[in-house]
Structure formats: structure tokens, C-alpha cells
Image: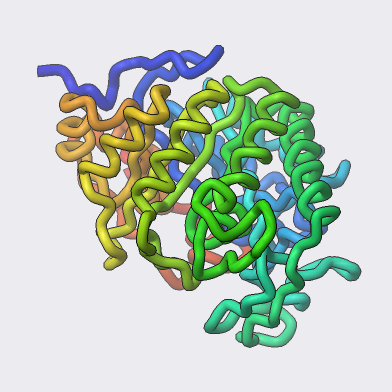
Length: 362
């Protein structure tokens, strides 16, 4: 029997040669001006045989640069950097979306340019600490609650970054509405205690995400816009809440009406988070009605099984892609995988980034 993972799929105007997606993963290699660079271009080009590459989180504005050395997509230098990446991936025959990630309350001023600030749906401090290059681990500061003007500005920043992605030659963008970052903060009662039209009820908590998705889709075309969500995820001090499944189903339905390229659902149970039930995944897939990506601890056998059962249209792989630039080939051959070096996940430089061996090199 043929493997569903290695069958083609149309995604908007793209034809994907396989259904393997490289999941977005922070790598912290944007060492100068938060701009992508030649080393990052090499990293993504090495992995261009994926059906679709989704980049690490890319900040749409200085306020979204909560982590050390993460890239942005709001300046001319950053557009030029991502053009290096897009060209390198396309030269290898690949397809690549940039994940737009505003970190919201998750960050520290020591990681951010002068004049930037932590903003969030509500002035609720995230527990725990943030690593900074200059000062080491630091407590999260209290963010400033966003005003109506801030919301409009943030929407415009997402639109501007999406247009910059297209100008750089990237094939589209994924809106990061998962894992406790800004868009997810609006969805989550633990981070959103607003009393205006953007808080309180489930529909109000969904509102900002839907507005951003619609604005970005209008700007660059819905076929170039995907979105990632993590219902029940506990990363960055959000978590399961009463009425969650119904809220995310309503969100998926609203996103589906926009005709977006895909809905990408995170299940981090393989790393100890609460599982996303099969029933909720099926409900979200039906409500969205378009291409559906699942991610979370997959290997070839489980990916093939879920595709064959119609549970997903694409399967994303995260950590296996860190250490296996030729992951598609290894999956096809059922070959052993390299193990990633966790101590080098977020360090600057090529070590633990572009130096993992391929099967051919072995």
C-alpha cells in the first residue's frame, strides 16, 4: 500500500509534492537587526523537500520581539533577509510560509528595540522568566493593556508584515494564534479579562483573531494565509477553560468562511500537555472545511494512519526536523533519525543548526 504522506496536495495556488510539513520552531539565529541571514537561508534550504516549510515565529513589529534573536518582518533589512531565505528554498524546489508571531506579554524589554513595549489584551503578568542575552533570566514584566488604537495598530502591523512576506518572495504566512502568544492571549480567559468588545464572551475573545485573519487575507489573498491554534494548550500560562471546545469550533467556522489556506492544530500531549481529543479535532476540521494540519509527536506510521482515516490533510513534524534536514527521505526509507542537541536549540551559529548529517553524507 502506498504511503499517504508522500502523495501530492493542492494548497491554494501551490502544488505540494508530499503532505509533510515542517512545523514552526524558534531557533534564535537572527543575530543582527532581527533579520534573517545567509545561515538561516541555508537551514531552510536544507529542508526544502518538505511539502511545506513553515518558518519560526517572525515578529510583525518591534513590540512582538519578546525573545532574544528572533526575526522580524517589518523593516527593509528584514525583507531583504527573508528574500535570501525564499530564494534559497525556491532554488531547491521548495515552498515556504512565514509564521507571523507577536509575543504579546511573553517577553522582556532587554530583548526588544528601544521604544518597543510589552502589550497584551489585559495587564496580567505572565508567571516565570524570560531569557535575555544581556541580563540572563529575568521575570516577565507586567504588560500594558492594549487600547482600541493599539488593536488597530497591531492589525495593521500584521497586514504590513504579510505584505512584506509576499514582497520577499515567500509563498504565504501562518498567523500564530497558539501557544500563549498575542493572538492566543485574546482567546484565553487566563490572559484576557477585558470588558469591552474583545473580552468576556467567547465571541468577543474570538473577535480580534478573526479581524486580523480577515485583514491579512484581504491584503494578500486568503490562499496565502494559514493559521495555527492550540486548544487546551498550557504553554505560557494559558490553559483549558469552560466552554473551550465550543469557542474554538466557532473560531474555526469563522476562519473557514474567510477561505484561508489551512488550519493548523497543535497537540502537545507528546510533550506532557493535555491531549486534544479526537472528537475536538474532528469538530474543528468539519467547522473549518478546508485543508487541515495536525502536529504533535508524529512518526511515519501514525501520520499515514491519520491521513488515511481522513483526520488531517497534512502532517507537521517539529523536533525530527531540527536534526534531520532530509527528513522526507528518511521517512520514505524508514531510515533511523538523528537526535537533536537540545543544548543548541537557541544558540547563535551553525553548530546544532545546519551541521546535522544527511543519509547521503553518512
